[in-house]
Amino acid sequence: IIDSRNGVSGDDSGEEIANILGLETVSGLRTAYQASGLKAEKLFYFTGIPEDIYLYPMREHLRSTLLFSGVKGDTMWDRNPIGAAGTWSWDPGGATLQEFRLRMNFVQLPPAFFGWRHHKQLIEVSRSPELVPWTLWNEYDRPIPRRIVEQAGVPREMFGFSKKAVSVCIGIDKNCYIGEDDHYISPEFAQLLDDHYREFANPRLLTEMALANSMHSMIRRVHRIFYRLKKDVGPEIGSSKNSNILKSLNSQFLAIVEKHSDFR
Image (cartoon, rainbow, N blue to C red; front, side, top):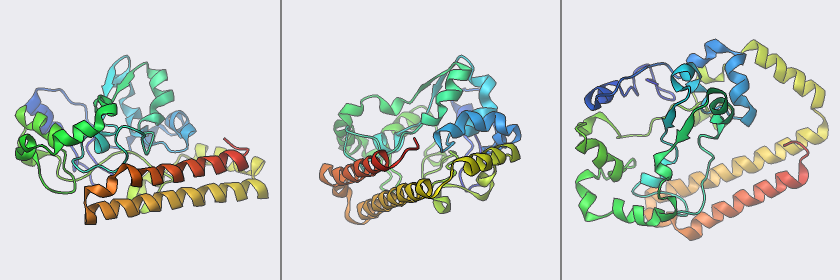
């Protein structure tokens, strides 16, 4: 996928890197799925957030394959990560592939999850003197994968200086996560949503949804505060104590939804 969130065509292409590594590539735009309309939407929107729908146009290339993904690379390989090491994940990255993966019969393998229970030791490795030559000392600092890629022959300036992503996060934090083109849904799907709303919407349900959305927004804002503090104060803000605060808020949110909601 050669364009990133809020980016332009070609701004996140890895074709040159693939050529250096001797890999064949198949390229596409992250919004190409829109041409398939409801056929694509029904396989991804069941989770509520169709993050991985951008892979739908690649479906025939994925059939009966092993797909390596970068899920949780941010946490595992960051030199100064946020979160309690080896204990929990802030988001279920890759989960929206479930139905699509079963339909196309492929397996997703995120290498970053290897060694998850030894995350603290991986952080120590990332901060070790031996990896200083592959440390950028910026906000997007992943010495372990950088060493692997650079030693494979890829020049430093070709990759990994800032965060770029291709996921389609409709419904979450539209100011930061998605571009205007991501707001598109097919007329068929829009009609289905409208029909569903008219059938089930009532004052109680709308109140419960407002409560759940408010709690979710609060948790995300707290998470951002910790992220800003991490940048201003340092990696100690990502300690287990502070991470447990986030975990507690998340648990309270889920408990409220479970107690007061009939919709799941």
